[in-house]
Image: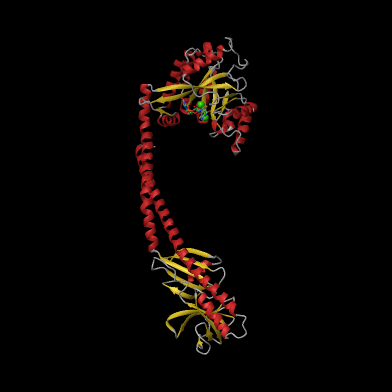
Length: 539
Ligand code: C2E
Ligand code: CA
Ligand code: CA
């Protein structure tokens, strides 16, 4: 990526990093506000419905008590009516109706009443006859609802169910008969069409036409309640939530931008820093042993590059190897790695002739004849003979086949062994493998990790092992961390392994003294590969 593109990408990513958390915060604030308001309006509606249900309970209970008498307006019935009236918090009066005329009631004796109630507005499915807007001569300013069943009628205040106590004066509320969608009592503005949103449900909440609306239906009676709050309450809620969430979003965005800038700056600075590091020789090597899974013997070690900055900071190879490949410094890195290995291991093979040192080569190294010269130097300086030097090349190294093939053939002709590294992570195809002369296949850590797990890719491990056997390659399993993995690999016929179970990568001095100790414990005899397991080395 060139510089200006990197900057552009950084700016766009940065803007997104700021915008995304804020938009997300606003969205959450809006959702939260909606939920709060929906719950508020729903609780109003439930409260009104429960008042209405309570009134209906008392009405039908009262009517039931009156129903069995032969003379509906007898003195004992009138006494009972008064008793029902007084004991009910909801019923204003209860009486007897015949032909729409209120003949007698808890309000007075028969004959003094004779009030014409008019035809009912609705007859419900349960047989109740409802009059929803009745006025009486004795209370001209109030409107009442009259519920009639079996000839008896209860009179309640029209607005009783909707007298919900509320701190917001502009809540609208209505009781509705679901059958005909007739509004029985109303306060504020309600659209009866909102009933249709209920469908088969018991209750719904939604936002429509500048209102947050709740519709609830009675489980026991032919009554529904609609409650609505103007949307400006919602806006206030959203603003309040946004006031908390947006600064949080901004802070998150700022942290994200800072992190992006840090990584980009590091990425852009790395090539320059690496160039300086190569000049100042800041690279060094550690060596990770490779063990024989049967005997436990250390048969070799892979050289792994490390970079210590003058500040003491260690830069991981995963970070800088890629940069070195992208910027063309990788061959310089390889050159220094080989130089360091030559210095470190100058006489190692005189004392440990069965041992090998593994060097990682990048794709570019396999396109250059210079690599052969470097490896010749390494062999000379370490007094290496056949099999003492191993090179590890990833599948990408095999891509430009003609030159790579020629270089590998020349390398191999010098007695250097070749391993295919990170096998299975690239474009593994059998055909290219067959066209190269190889010695080892390294099973990548990602597959070793799957051993013993249910993961589908765990099937890949046996497949890779079979492939290696078909190609007559020896196998080195990478990243072995558990006994179970080691056992599985050994039982499957994998010969060698490398991983923290056996040893972490070591400084050369430690590798050397460890090798000496192990050698001494074998009573100084020069061990052959089939030697018995050294103490402390057994799996
Ligand atoms: P790689 O070639 O696959 O090397 C194996 C990596 O696995 C090493 O990481 C090693 O330290 C790590 N490892 C070994 N055993 C275990 C284990 O049991 N558990 C875990 N979690 N990790 C384990 P490292 O040293 O960080 O190297 C990373 C990669 O950098 C290497 O992967 C290789 O691709 C590259 N690299 C390292 N040194 C060189 C070098 O000199 N030249 C080139 N071209 N690439 C190198
Ligand atoms: Ca490797
Ligand atoms: Ca690997």
